[in-house]
Image 1 (tube, one colour):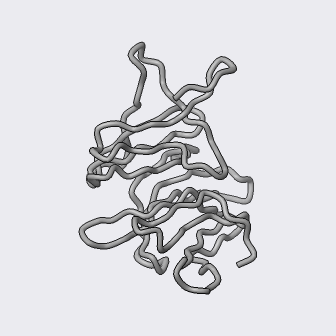
Image 2 (tube, one colour; image 1 turned 120 degrees about the vertical axis):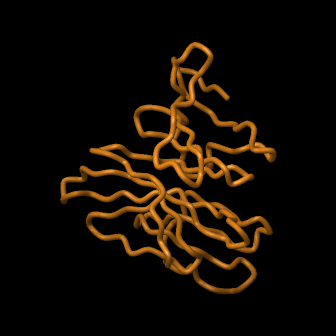
Length: 178
């Protein structure tokens, strides 16, 4: 594709990768074939895509990602969480961001019951899936919100295999924390 990969994720058997290009589109590539990546989305002036990952739901592999929709050419808009098939079809909106909310870093739990995501500039949230369109804040013991660090190349939030915990890093008071 000629696009520099960002936000790279692999499927369970490592045979496919999905990534966001520097053009803000989502690409998929079969790593067992000598093929170029296939562009799944078509970025326009008012839409960007990011942070894709493979998820398995009821025997089907889908892609979980965020999509930014600008309400005009002034870059003001929302980022919502969606799923799509591996061919870019059957797009389904999961969240319903309001005003200028931006939901980023969507991560599905291994048991497929919850999604962790960050509200840009605010903190980490968790929601039940399916059924909810907005989550509740994840906080420290003292009630302070947690904001994961944004990384162009590393997937910051990871769930434990039993879906009971997640690990991430944050940056507070000039220090990184796990």
